[in-house]
Length: 154
Image (cartoon, rainbow, N blue to C red; front, side, top):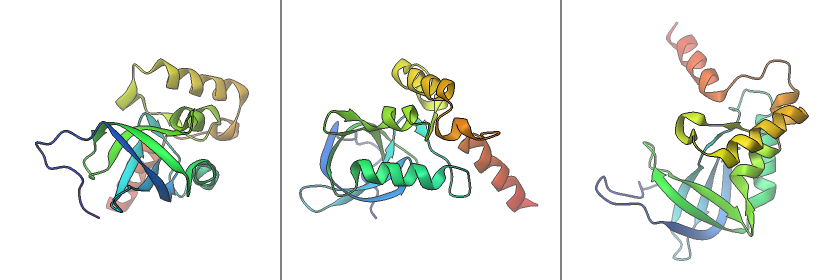
């Protein structure tokens, strides 16, 4: 898959197309009207990794919300992997917020510290004990990835 932007280019501000794949609870593949396929990372959230509790539930929920449907992405950035990072909408539903509200992702404060809408959605899910917040000791994916790398180095 090609990297969508050269180093000096600004990402487009809005992408619209059909979701043709869901990799996990916070990333997807989008087919644009011209047939080009791009990767998208949901801004401000971090869903459980493959081997973490709730990972499958997060992937399934995201798929149910957006797979094979028209979505739009308000692009905010392009990450180091060449994925567009943005706010994803299915109709009027703000998907990033919805995933937090359902307890299927963490608010990724490292990248979206000032986003009060996302912070509130996470707080409500946590208070209600939904999704990841119903598990005994939820571990942020960022920490899980770090621990996995350390184990791989041993």
